[in-house]
Length: 433
Image (tube, rainbow, N blue to C red):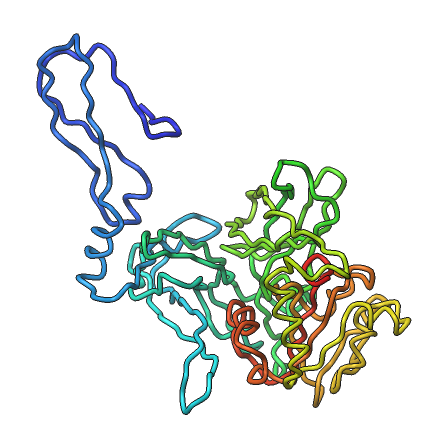
């Protein structure tokens, strides 16, 4: 018998006697637990009898896996699985990281903290000490993303978000990894970049299993969102995105298999991120529910300004070390693209052109990081996501150490403090009037 969506079950016509009642579930294997059973004595077959079955609570599971702890941290457990076969994989490293702002030497610094573990012989992993008050990011597999490491092959998932809370300091998450097997450069058809020092003939390049994803993007009331940009936040899918049609539908092909983070961005809605498990030969489907639409404020309205708008207004008024430009200032420049208007910021320049759109470079030809309404996007995606008419404001900082702490949360939530280049924060009119 299977329980329903609320976990309820029912046996009819049970004769008096003593019974063993229990349940099985694939999740029990990941938890390393035996089947949950209890003994039940039925004395009167004419009267309904309740026999509830339950797993231990989060606090009990936390003590089971991590022992007695005096802090407020939690635990993430699960199984590392091969995306092609579903089998548990042994010896795969699992990393959990998060951003912190610390006070040292009289100044605030942004740092990236990290925990690591390795999957056991059956693929199960346990990571204890995970903070339960901030979002954390997980990844399983090869951590070296260099071209040389790609040629060697290995296993990997994408990086995705896991959220614990003080009330629920326990999370279960199976992680699907794709095996990157070695293939000849000719077989790879140039799909994967070769290591810089690899010879041009007879060498190998890594080829990962590919997957397909389809889905819809919906409004909070169930209506469709047309024109939303959907993409994987994965280096294996860099630059690949889909735009939803009139039915809110999208399709993404040739994606890296494994557990991945999927992002949806639409002007006027809070950007949304969800986790998807992609398997080769098994098309995945997902429905993304965008969060409540941000109220658009008129340019003359100053009461009820959003948190981001108020922060921007204060930062611009106080000056600081950043470059500030309002949407009206940008539109007055006469430039047709947001990226072209950004050339007014010190240190930014055109480094390349992609499909007629400029790709900006920073000081010493470094790669700036771009954030739209606090959500990181690629530099060549800027003009796709926001038009001059949608632009509310811009602020640019020469490096992450000059950005205010409230903006560093966006930096820490994605790829940490990689590199020393400009940080470009673009706010749409839905956020900054």
